[in-house]
Image (spheres, one colour):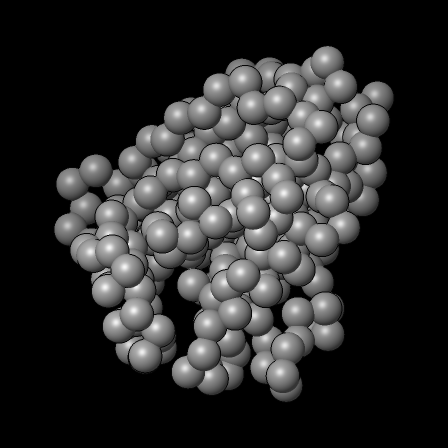
Length: 232
């Protein structure tokens, strides 16, 4: 059985270079339109968690990191200047999208940086049943602009998923070329898909820029990364 897995920091739907507009729905539809099995998302506005299933056609499991400060008003204000407000008002979350032929057996989240004075960072761990087999998926977004702290958080994720169970760890590590002992080798970038106990049929690879170009700009300042996994 082969599984198409992706990870993408959505950048709150913003573009590179910044355009003053957001394309969040378009980005979610793009990453899910060819029916991948698993998609780890980071930098999702909290309000959008309720929209992900409708946009993607997949089961969505969300994990809030920074709660929103307001409702629809905060969203409208942010839309006026998304490059200025970013997540300050609308909050920030991770989300795992799961193809509906599979079943979400359990889900939990863990804060990776308790006591850290900056923004909260979380890892969600979701157990997914696919074709009668169970796969553990961890989706994280590590601290930015503090490499030492980010490495601590990645190491903590390694402890959270310790064992021999088939496991995928994906997300924005915010430190390039950093992996977890016992898992596949990391890419030389900050966005990763690492696996243990399941074979990489097609190793992780970032999308070409043309796959995410809209109106002359790139969706997000991160490229999606995808891999194909296969149970023996």
